[in-house]
Image (cartoon, rainbow, N blue to C red):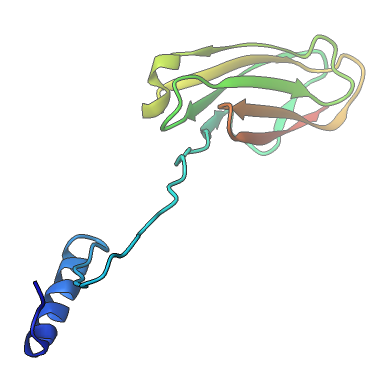
Amino acid sequence: MKIPASLWPLVARIGIGLSVAFGGAFLAYSDVSVMVSAIVGTGNSASEILAVNPNTVPVVLRKNTIQTFSAQVRDLDSPSVSYTVTAGTGSVSPINGTLTNTGELTTGQAYVYFTYFSPPGKAGSSNITLTLNDGTAVIVKNISIFVY
């Protein structure tokens, strides 16, 4: 069916109206074949570190002490996230930790808990690096430490 030329302004207004109403859908008419293609990405959302406690910058510790940390993490579309926690130089047996509530990663109710053992004989600035990996994206958070 061919649309008369006198109706094209009406068709154009309908097409624009549909485009606005349906977020980009549009109406078009042609008496020839038209091939349309689109490439749709996977839509992976990277993991997020929502909060770290203690949250002072830097975290101040005495030499040879133990500090427990928690990090609230979320990944909107991944059922599992792996993590690593590494400490700066000078630490002996620096980190042990767990990832809990992994079934709640999409709601932000998952936590990484870890314990840091400050160096027994070295004072100064250092850091702890928390890394999240959902298999597609890697997120890194550095936590500043000052040992006295």
